[in-house]
Every structure is written in C-alpha cells, then in structure tokens.
Image 1 (cartoon, rainbow, N blue to C red):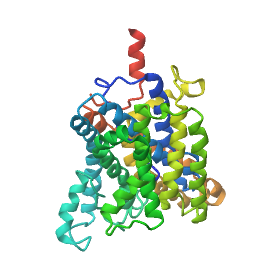
Image 2: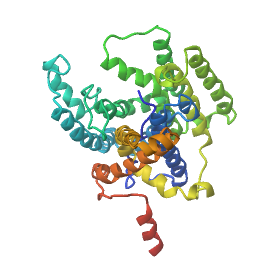
Image 3: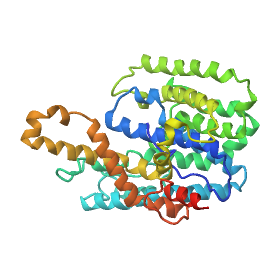
Image 4: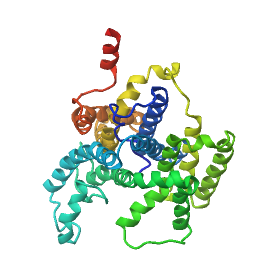
Length: 396
C-alpha cells in the first residue's frame, strides 16, 4: 500500500456546490503538498516522511469533506454517480495503456493459474471494486523502462479501490455520523485495533484488503465529513490540541514497538497508520485557516497548486511509472565513462532524478490529463494552472 494518493480526485461540481474560496485555498494547499510528498516518498523511500505528513490520511479527509458537502445539497445517487464519473475515466486511460502493454508482452488467461477467473478479474480495470490484475515480472524496455513495470504501474490502484468504496458508503456514513457522531468517527479505529491485536481475522485476500483500508483510513474520511458537518466545532477549542497529540503518540509508540524503520514503515503497520493519520488530520482540520488571499510565501506557488489540484488524479495514477522511467534513464548515465569516473557523486544523488520525475509527470499531465476534464464534462485543457482564468478576470 502506498502512502500515497489524490485526494487525487476531481473537485466538487462548482455549478452546484458553492464552496468557500478562503477555506478551499487551504485545502488545495494540503492536497498539493500531499501529492508532492507522495512522489518524494516513492522515490526516496524515507520511512520518516509519512510521519512528517501522512498524505493518504489527508487526501481521504479532504475527499470526505467534499463528499459530505455534495451530499448536503444533492440526491445521494446523483452524487455517487458524479464521483464515479470523475474518477473512472482517468483509470480507464491508464488501463488502456497498461493492459495493452501487458498483453503485448504475453500476459494472458494462464498468467494467474486460474484461466477461468482471468476474464472476470479484468473487469476490475473498469470498476475497481477490487484490485485490478496485472502481470508480474515483465521485462522492461532496455534503458527506458525498468523491469516489472506493470507492478509499479498498478501500485497506486489500491487508492482508487479504497476511494471508490468510500464513495459508495458515504451516504450511509453520513447518516450514521449525524445520528452517532463519535461512535461513527471511532469505529474504523476500533476495527483497526481488532485487526492489529488478532481479535478479528478474515480469510482470503481481496475483501480483507478493502476492509483493512477502511479500518486504516476510514476515520480520516469520516473526520473530513464531520468537519464539513460542523461536528468538530461543537467541542471546546482546547480538546483537539489536547487529545490529538496523545493519539499520535500512541500510534508512534505502536510503530516503534513493531520495528518501525526503512523497509518497515507506517504502510506495514495499519493500526499505527490509522492512529497517526487520524491525529494529524484532526489537527490540520482544527487549524483550517481562512485564507482570503494566498499567504505571501505561497502566492508564488499558487499556479502550481492550482495545476496539481486540477490534475490530481493524473499525477497520482502516473507518478509511479514516471519514477521508474526516470530512474532507468538516469542509470544509463553510468555508461558514460567520464560521468562514472568523475561525477559519480552526481549520479548517486537522487535529487536530479526527482527533477526528472516531475518533468515526466508534467508530460503525463499534457498527454493524459484531458481525461479529467472529459470526466468532469469540461472543455479539455493542456495545462490548467489558472493562468487563463486569471487573465480573463483582469479584463472584466
């Protein structure tokens, strides 16, 4: 599981739901920061990064907030259908490229050892109620794409599956939140504890993985809904800053007690992830500044933040593949004797690779980002960083 997307999903329908621009600037900043941290983590692999900023919990919380906002003004069925419409076309585009490449390399019904199930499993590339299948151990393209590229391509898809289930459950979660707010908020954490301490086990792989994701990040999603519903405002202001650090410390203690470190971080410990993400998200939502204007330090980054929010799904779905391609291309430089002999320190430095990764992500935004516009029933744009809207505003 990555610590990754998104929320890498499209923003709410502006023609239906009028959001607060001041609050949205803060949420847009959090979403953009979460995306950058996801890419940085998947390249560097530093175990401490999810502690500094738990991207997945933040993105699920922002998605839950938007979902609750939509459900408050529109019929649930229409909201769910609209969310699915915005999420799935970018996935289908990824699947069209990825599945075609896997088939070209010989992937087929016998790959999983269960030919009869291969065809039904392919439908998860259309509606990812479970993990879409992919070929393991595929050869890459020498010097361009590394080996086992399909595994890297499919890595972020757990988030799409989890997000889809959260969307489907949201009408029921919102009703439960209104009836029993604190029991609903804490239920996923209690479920995560039951898994962690062996009180609850489930057979198989597909269904338990979805339930584990719910137990890990469900509280963050519901916390976003609770924030939109004003639940957090009903408690004294000192409660969240007092309680959240204690919850975070409990999560950190559990992680340290279970071998936290490089190669065994929060992703490998769902209960620690659940506690740490819940506590961090609670604090971030408690702060929620109202930015009527971008702060001075962020104003220069406003167009980039807008772009990342406009293309969050594209960035999240394609960033793993971009990392693989960037690392493969960078490794080719070792074949140049002058660089290998005199500039080995540069070739071993991961920061130039990060720059290359973001250049490739920019290419994916141009090449594939239009799918997000079509999904949102907008006119396709190559580079939606808000610059054109700003120029239009100046002429009015």
